[in-house]
Image (cartoon, rainbow, N blue to C red; front, side):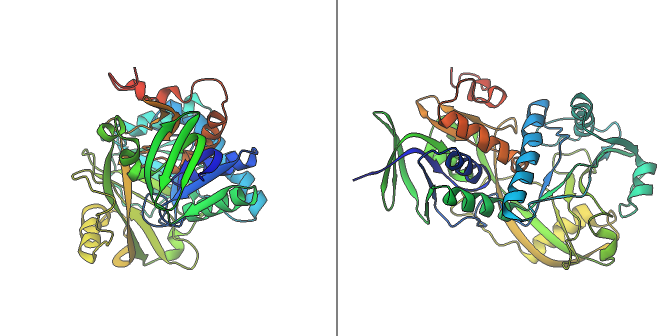
Length: 392
């Protein structure tokens, strides 16, 4: 006999765990399935920290999501007693007059400022002298400008995922971990999900499988998503007190004109004396089942030489640790949040294109409501229909 549920959630990372939690909290009969044991380091929701910022240069459509997510993180903290979000302030900066692209958008600093102004988000616009005076940890060239947002900070992704899964299970969700979904298909009255261990029949499915989404959804996701391997690096701080939260912000720094001429980073967490830094690369796609997950010392050294040397003089080239993660990216670096054209009982929540974690709590709330049959458009700006000939 097949197991039955109102909704089955496939993939329990950032968005999947949030959706499962909201469904269980609302009283739905819900099953969550993940091929690993989340929180895990196989996908996109790991690596100790993720930047969160209300002023999102990726576009006006994201601002309500991240604002709502901030409120949900605080609610979850009150329920669990855990620290899920740390407000450190955040700096987004680049070369004044430059056209460096970030997450598919030109003039990312200008766009970030525009979103902050349009949404009454507290911020300051700083020139190079003001940035240097406030944050002498950055070695600037003198032609930079940026936005400082006091409400920005970091999320702790593993804690966020674990907290939402615990609360989901406490509210009746059934978790099937270490199971691989082999087939997702339509059936009378909903969907059928077959794993390597069981069959689940449900009224609807939420597919939040990250880099594995295309293999389960098929077309059009297979033609609209690409998976890229990214590397994260922790380097020893020679003056760790200067990089502590409260003295050093989370930051995004577009230091050149190319798509990959940028890095982002975080304060050194207490007791770590190491600064986490990373960039993004889009030269080659990878298979999530075959990708090399080891970040070699040579890879960290190359990253340091290209991005860090001469820009953060208080950070040494001594690598403390490193990790790899996966980005699932669309042609316009936006999200896809929609029902599958050939199976409207499957709601797909991917790809987050490297900037999704900060929005995930609100996306989970939205997807849970739609999976329970709430009226209204799912997420217009993130629909498949924006791609010509898809979902029409």
